[in-house]
Image 1 (tube, rainbow, N blue to C red):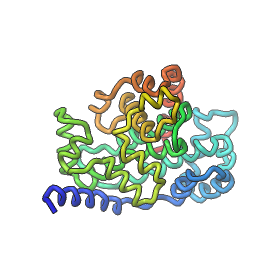
Image 2: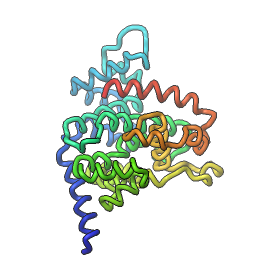
Image 3: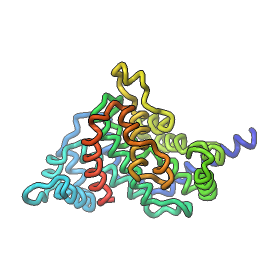
Image 4: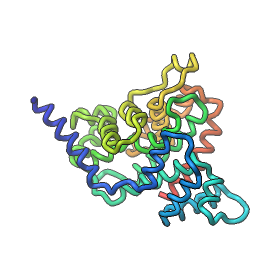
Amino acid sequence: MSSGTIHRFSCRELALKSLDTLPPFSPVFNHLIASLAYDNVSLAELSTVIERDTVLSGNVLRLVNSVLYGRRGTISSVRHALAIIGLTKLRNYVLGLSVSQLWKRVRTAPSWSSSRFNHHSAATAVMGDLLVQRVRVESAEAAFAAGLLHDIGRFMIAVALPDEHERIVAMMQRGEGTVEQCEFDVIDVTHAELGAAALAKWNLPVAIQRAIAVHHDSPVSPAAQREGAPISLPMIVHAANQLADHFGYSIIPLESERAPSSGEVFEELGLSKDAEHILADFENEVHSLLQAI
């Protein structure tokens, strides 16, 4: 075995071991992830699961009584709240809350910002979910979760390989390549590969694993646009990631500076006419979610 192979193996294993330092996902999170595989989810059943978590119940009620879902009177029942929000929005919101709690008490590299990471993950998830409502997409129901978890590999590097993380960031700031190019130069493995491995270890849906594994290599196919074929989930995550960066929700500030314009991304997706409405919904939903996390 060559020294390069040993280094790649050791970095990958160290990063994967960092998962052991995280608290387990909540039962609610596991229930919601499992529900992505089927459509006949009962709101009553989901209400019962959420009601067992006092903090989560409070956050759900706060959301439904916020400006985003502004109504006359106050909603004080989780079941009433779910009937208003709907299964999809509720599932996405709770996934966002559950994942954000994992990162808060873990030691990371000096330059790492958990706040920026949470904001980027939430923004990518929200944008991905809005995009799949307007184009034909394979595994559209998994878009929010895929966006939420797409950069978990970067977090793993910041936790398990802090010195290497700082070298990667320094290379990026010197303009020596994209994040994946710099990662491969330093640790012989990319955050996309690490993220997919983490999701496999957690037994999350294969569609999400695949989307994360190739999300940096999946621009929208012109052929898919012309022929009206479904756009793949990795393409949606790729586009949502670019848009999140463009609007300032990047993990490292320079990634916002280097992101393509929103006009370019929406044009690639064939959504130029919908851009204004998508952005209005995006700002409302991101603001609401970030207030909670």
